[in-house]
Length: 138
Image 1 (cartoon, rainbow, N blue to C red):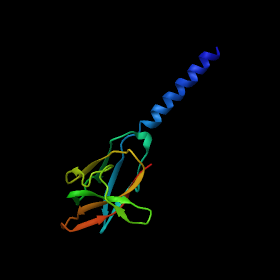
Image 2: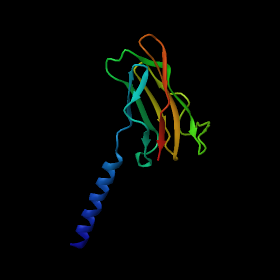
Image 3: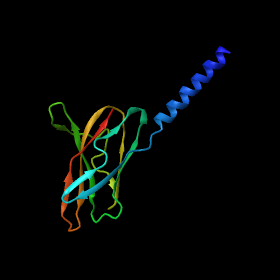
């Protein structure tokens, strides 16, 4: 009886852990209000339990009259303790792929760090607008 209860408890814990770690990939909705870019997720937090090679997707709000520039998301580098940036290529590529309405980027998620990136949009008059949020690998 004790073994049956122990086995049931272990199965329940394993099932809960699998559900907890099976999180959907991050989705960031980008909007342009006036001349300011807003995002619904900042910072983008990637937890180690999510696994490796996590795809982050940025998408514009439905019906947007603005679009991503050809290099809509650019990874600028890793934030250092002194507030500077160091070149970073092992966790995130410098530029990400996509089109005018969405951009995706693969985060290796193999170590902790904070990474500054820039969102580049063109407003309805084709004027560039930018914002610099961060991605946090925990």
